[in-house]
Length: 288
Image (cartoon, rainbow, N blue to C red):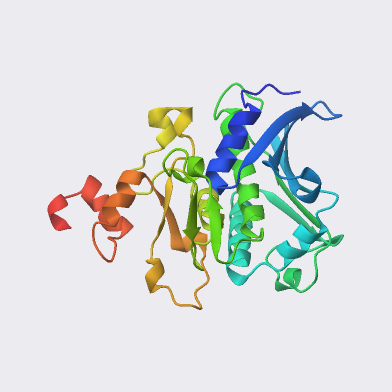
């Protein structure tokens, strides 16, 4: 078994912050002596939902989706994901492949390419989604800490799953601890086609990371682990200008910004570009 500094509660908090969906986690050791982390949606019956299982080996990692034994209705709903959700799902998994991971997808017991339209042409009663990544620094004394590696790849897998989870069509109850509402408040947020759920944020972080694309700030590097995952997601083209037929691609349409940079880009209408934002920070401020 490899050593690690990753605590289950920390992993749960990072993935919760990233996805907006509350998770709880525990760890154990499998039959091969490998450390596993089991993430489940918080306060929901395990048998009707799912588990994301991350297994850490020597210089390798594996993340699996495990549906509950009574999750047939959930799987059917996931298989009916809309065009936006499918786009996010494909985009996140494509980025994982670009970063050297292997993706294995099975629908109803049959292997399928994750980017094929045929995936969505059947009723889902079974789903296997496995991410494998080798040649990592896991279990070594040098390089990136195990905790950061495990959180990053678990977050990517979770972002793909969250993308195709069923969502509210008109409103959603938002946890103030996740999105920053006043303590003790629960807000009913009216949602539209582009902002109605957590998937865009999760996908943007999975693809682009949590470092601000304007100033380069990683919040955890400045404030410590308490600020891990604190980042805002900016629509490069304002939501109000997106046509009804536009399908969000988080790889090209979204970008992570720290709260300061996000505020600055919206000081003008339309928002200033990321290039102009960088010019404000690093170049001649008189040019903007």
